[in-house]
Structure formats: structure tokens, C-alpha cells
Amino acid sequence: MSISTPNAISTPSTSPTITTDALIIGFGKGGKTLAAKLSAAGRKVVVAEASADMYGGTCINIGCLPSKSLILSAEQARRDGANSTPETREAAFEAAIKEKRRVTSMLRDKNYHKLADQDNITVITGRAHFTGPHSVEIATAEGPIAVTASKIFINTGATPRIPDIPGIHTTPGVYTSTGLMDLDDMPQRLVIIGSGFIGLEFASMFADFGTAVTVLQHNAEFLPREDADVAAAIRAQLEAQGVKFLFNADTKAIAPAADGGVRLSVAVKGMTRGASQACDSTPAGTGNAHTDITGATDTTTTTSPTSNPTDHATMSHVQTKPSDDGEPRFAEPAEARFCLTTDAVLVATGRTPNVEGLHLEAAGVELTERGAVKVDELLRTTAADIWALGDVNGGPQHTYISLDDYRVVWSQLNGSDRPYTVKDRKHVPSSTFLATPYSRVGLNEREAKAAGLDYVVKRLPVAAVPKAQVMRRPDGLMKAIVERNTGHILGAMLLSVESHEVINIVKLAMDLDAPASTLRDMVFTHPTIAEALNDLFA
Image (cartoon, rainbow, N blue to C red):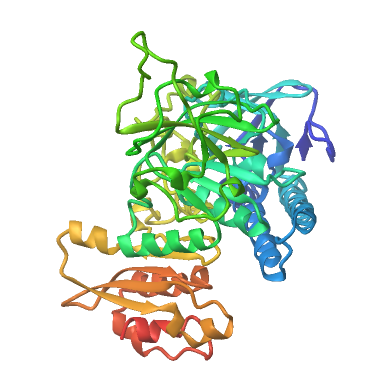
């Protein structure tokens, strides 16, 4: 059953109140899976989703699936040479966006009907907020609907974290990942604020489409949580694609540029050029000298050289007015101020739990210091019979973790003698879909060393893997950490073609407490990337 949707298949009674067994706020992976399971068990379920554009949740609409569709289209454009001219780039990008929209629309429709077509499930489109411990009001297009439920499940996901930069909310051309994946026209120049894995995926994707990409990182270290050799290999891959990096870069302000683009005022620590005047006081396109990022004197904060400074975001050094004694007033020697002019800006500074407007205090649901819904190992909130699943509870932000959260909750509702808990969850893997995918599970060398473990490091260049050579994808490295005395696998880092598939084999071995020798001696089909585990763990 559906309420307040463009294609409603039935309508509720005229009563302003619905009483149900379960209310799920949010149509994400964990919530929709739980709704179907509860319905199959004969429970009455209401699912409240704030937007009809989000049926099915973040992953299929604005997250992993649309981004991977675009990444695959970008890789194809690079392989075919469609990123070589402005005309072919635009055509490839237009086709990619069209395909992405087709995929998301199809998946959204299937997800909607998978729930709404069930007699026990009512889907209500509207924004929900708590009015009491077991009562919620949902603001729909036709007016508010009150819902009373015995059990309530919060599954509202996360939303992009927007830093407090003047002009960031009001300047056209500034996007989160959601908006950037739905552009009609490809930006020729793109500045990305943030060099986390979301930002790097978009950097790799747009570089493959032919966009000139510049990434701003607020500190000096690239991927500081990764091992130095792995981070260096990832950076080298991105730079080979044409991505440029500017480290120790602090964006001070964002404003429209005179040419219709976006102008950023950027302070860079560790550079000796520049002055303290604000970027917005200098007309766009002026300055002492237009220079590429490589014009800085401290090369530790810059990128690899480029032959054409205008390929990427235009950068100009800003000059101050003379002081009273006629001498120029320069900034502190350790910081330079620049103007960057670009066509589009991606804000990729992380995501934060989406709790705004829920009025959780009305239900007695508390938040953590980081703004997530506070839960215990069973995902119970601080209010009785209210649970929180997925990104909103502050756990790892992956759709497969939201699915596993469903398992935690369902194990409490189905009469299990011993419920499955978050503490039972083992070895969460992750994959970042760069031109060469990067996947890891468990501890890296940096973490193993910090923990005081006795370990050995296993390394294998991907160029030594026959299948990688056959695929003409020999870039990257494989690395594993093995406990010295026991042979237990502590972790693995795979920067390799098809690493997103192979990492699951390593995870399974770790979950089963299989020693490294198990993968060393396993019989794999040939030629495959997976068989590289024989040599990696040798």
C-alpha cells in the first residue's frame, strides 16, 4: 500500500492515525529488508520515506550504484579514446548520465513495488518526526499522518557534511556527490575539497571522462590511515590519470567567478608565495601571475609537473595593497593565498548521520558525541523498542553494514536463543573504485605496528600476476600482514584489478581463522586474479 506517492496503488482510510506493528523511518537497505521480513511473518509495517526519489535508499539512488555506473562509463570512455576531444567527451558524459538515470530509475521502481505491493506494508512518502515514545507524525503532500507503532526502526542514513566556508551554500557550481552525479553538462575543470575515498573515486572518474581535476587536501599527508607504500601507489595512479593535488590547502571562501565558474580563496601552508588579502577583493582573472599549482616553492605540498598550467583550475597569486610606508604587506612566510577558478566544485568532506528534524528527544532517543543515534551492541537506542540501523547509528558507512544491521535486529525479533550482535561481526572489508580498485580488510602494517604485534609483511606486484597482464591491467600492488608465530592473516591491502572480488576471499579465510597457508595452497582456477593469493601468501 502506498500513501502520498505519484503512483499510489491504494489510499488509506480517512482516519488521521495509523496503528501498526512496526514503523520503519527510511527506505534504506537495512530498513527495506526488515520490512519485507516482518511482512512475511504477518506483521503490519509502515515505511516512511521523505522523498519519492529515495525509494530503495542511498545506495541505489545517490550512492554506490549510480557512482559505479558512471565509473564504468568513464573507464570505457578512456579505453575507447572518447575522452580525447571536447566533442567526444561531452557525448560520452551525456550517454553515461543517461545510463545512470536509467539504472537508478529502474532500481528505484523495483524497490518501491517490492514493498508497496505487499498487503502488510504501507509506504508513506513524507518527512517523519517523533511526537512521543511510540508515536510519529509524517508530513505528506496531503497533510500530516499520525502513526503509532509498537516497534520503531530508524534507518535515515547519512547526509553530506558541509564545512563552514563562506559562500559554499550560495554559489552556483558547488555540489555534493549527489548533485555532481546528475549534471547535464560535463565540467571541463573540477576542484574537489577533500581527498578521502569518496573524493578520490570522483577524481578518478572525472579524470577518465577528460575533466581536469584538482584535489585540495587540508593537511600534508595523503591517505594518512593507509600504509605509506600503498598511499604512494594510489597517488601515483591518480596523478598518472592527470589528477593534481594541493596539500595543506584551506579553502577560505567560495564565490561566483566572472566567467560564470566558481572562484575559491585558498590558503596553503608551507608555500612562500602569496599575501594576506582576501581572494574576493581581487577581480577574477587578475593577480601578479597566473601559475599552475606547481609554481609553489615547497614541492612537498604540490603536484607533479604539468606542461600546460591552464589545463586545471586557474590559480593566481593575490597581492595586497602597500602599507603606510610603501612596502607590501605579505602574509606569514609559512602560508600563501591563492585564487582558484574552476567550472565546478565537489565538496567531499565526509557524511554525517541524518537526524535533523526527527525530534528524537520526544522519544527519549539520545545521540553520541559525534551526532549519531546512540545504540548498544543489539542496535537498541536509549528508548525501549526503538532501534537504529545503517549509517545513522554511526557504524561503518556501507550498504552491506546496513544489511548486516538488519540481521542484528531480526535475530532479536525472530525468537533466537542467542541474538546476533554487532560484536559478532568480523573483518569488515571495503573497496574504493579507482581506475585500479583498492580493497582492504583487517589491519594494515601501520596498525599492526601500533598494536605491538609480531608480524611479517607479504608483498606482490600486480605486474607479476598473469591474468593482470592478459587484461592489460598490470598496475598496483598486493600486500598482506600475517602474524609471525601463528600464521593468522591480520589484514590485506589489494590495489589491483578485480580487488573488490578477491578481497572477499581473504575476508572469508580470516572469518574462518584459516592460516595464510590455506590461501597459499588453495587450488584456484587459471588464469584469475584470485590465484595471485597463492604467491602473495607464499
